[in-house]
Image 1 (cartoon, helix red, strand yellow):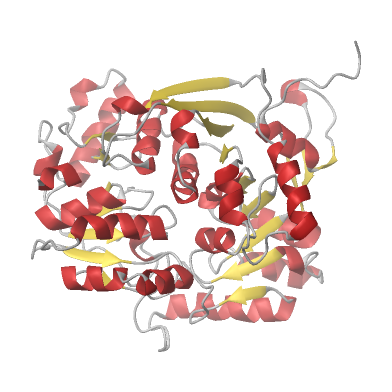
Image 2 (cartoon, rainbow, N blue to C red):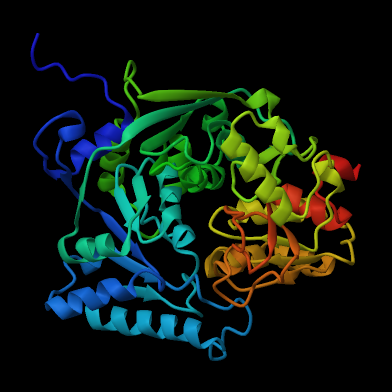
Length: 476
């Protein structure tokens, strides 16, 4: 019988809804499709060259109304009312402001209540919605896939292409199901799920794929938790991560500044429900994770795939069968200053960083505050808390979380990317070791010579109390 639609995955549905022109051919020989982009997010790091390209070509910005910018990577998190001290950072910010004014782009600058990390700002404004295509010159754009959007990072030339045409030329991605069933134990979070996934499939395991997270454990997660998982899809090499929209999604979006209203809301929700993967749809690959068995996770090496359960020990290079993996482990241990066999919970840290587009939302701050409330911080540990946006900061202060952090001895900062990357004043010193709720632990990521262990917010909080990598259960 003709005319019957084959079952489709969510990624396939969103892609097909956005095809402007389909490429000719099939299989590997297929030419790219031209797809429409619904939302283009900008910040100060990857946009200057793209704006200059438009300027040199005499082009206008195609859809200013579908473009929004915020300052995040180069922004200081202290003394934001003063001129930016670092000349490079100051130039980046000033250039973004000038470009946005010239091309008519909405910009949320330092001091604006909507300023913050671009991947926190988009969702909190209700700009990120199910079924959208969302791009940004930033790899962690995959965060927005938590809403059932097809969201991914793009390069500078692609940023200019979207600015000029509101489209992109791309080949369809492959699809991978990440099925997580079961119930998370107390103290285990979405950050532990994604670190376990990356440890299982490797930092290249998702290359060329859109990952769809599904299963009972995923369905129970809040939107903040879902954003954490999709955020780190890129650390598995994937182009994007997605989670099917459901009642949790709709409840989060309803009433937000840019969410539909009235009859438009009802129509939108009906369309969003249809985005979920059809029964019987085929994925190109599938990975299964048992949530019941997961423990708090932590990285020991210099990529997000080099992680183990917090209750384990630092692995030996001899534990890896592949010769390249052995060499990578040797190099990582040398850089991290660790010896094989050392219990992870014996590793002492100098700094704890709670922030980044992975873990800087209200739920993350509240979870950490619940752990440290009434406790004493290790005097040898510095703790920096950086909300993901000015709005998150205001909400946290209204809830009294800032007082909990300050009483504990933590530094309460203004919004920005902060110590996630060494592109602003918040950096590690050479040899300094950090338990970080961010997404990357590459060599020098948080400052030249800095050593990073990726952890969840509650592990970060417990670590600040004990001084060594710890879970909340270790505090009893």
